[in-house]
Image (cartoon, rainbow, N blue to C red; front, side, top):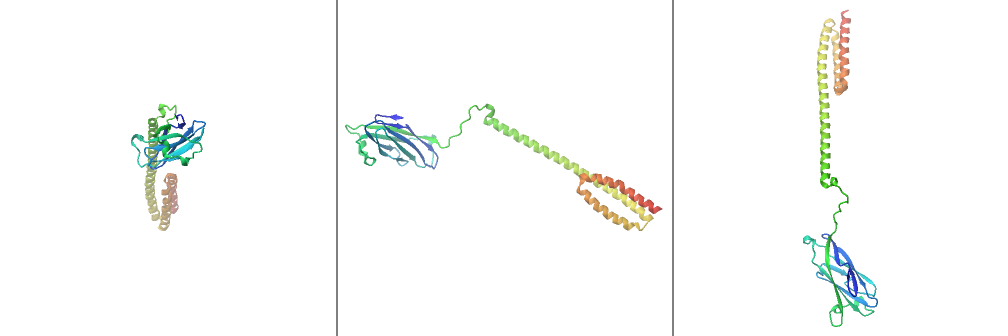
Length: 258
């Protein structure tokens, strides 16, 4: 607080939240310390095009206060190191009772014999419009930004290992499936060859059985198509078929022989 014989001024610095291309405002309060005298005031600045002061003149009654708002125009660029050289000057003088704000003239603040003028100088300070968040108290070394980065890196490595492991397991299962399909294909080829041999023997004994063999061959082809769609479960069915089919053919051949 700046104090004189006539008024108190608060604060002692004009602090403006600074943000590019946006207006910013702050205020100061003038309090008349006297109990019997009216005090007139006038606010000046070293950069009048940059600031707007409302009110820039006025009268404060005994024991009363007046708030003055100072608005800084939007700035296109920030000053070096956020330092500002602008200053404000507040002048006060005792005036007669009944003086209004409209009657306050610039000549009243001229220093003449028998007239007491009090001057108060206030400097301008820029403060960040969005100050950084303070570091929480009691933060430990383990909670430092570097530690957090290490945690993220560790989690990423673990995730990569899991994905690689899953891919390897999937590849192994795929290899097993293809191996089973290949094995079934070989078993099918062998069974087909045996079936053809049995058909030849059957035709020699009973030529009329050729047509029955061809129909059975078509049914076998359809059955093999369904077995190929389910390689994992088809192996058991294929083995059962292979075990039963030769017996059936043998039984048919034996019946023909009799």
